[in-house]
Length: 98
Image 1: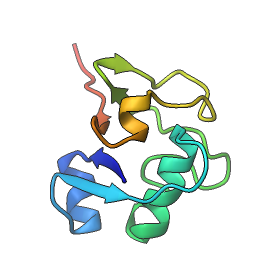
Image 2 (image 1 turned 135 degrees about the horizontal axis):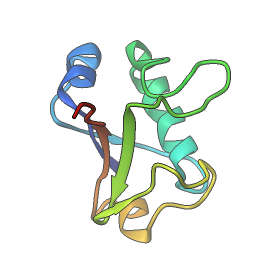
Image 3 (image 1 turned 180 degrees about the horizontal axis):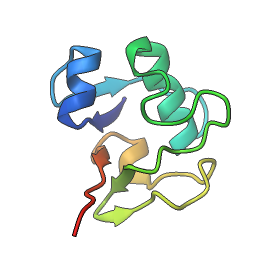
């Protein structure tokens, strides 16, 4: 099971708690985790990434094991700790302003 921590606005849309658990088929990558998340919670379609291009939305960031994976390839494997469920993938709203 993969653990994903969601920000408040996405928790509200999906009507879930702070953390969700997902089954991910194949390699554990950003793309496979988001595919599983959107399949399990259709209300999240288009909120984390664009529906057509599948590119991450500008104000969304991905963190795991205290590292920022936001600019990594969506097909790059996530750390083993995320794949085994011992560490969550954090989806964070980026802060803007000055």
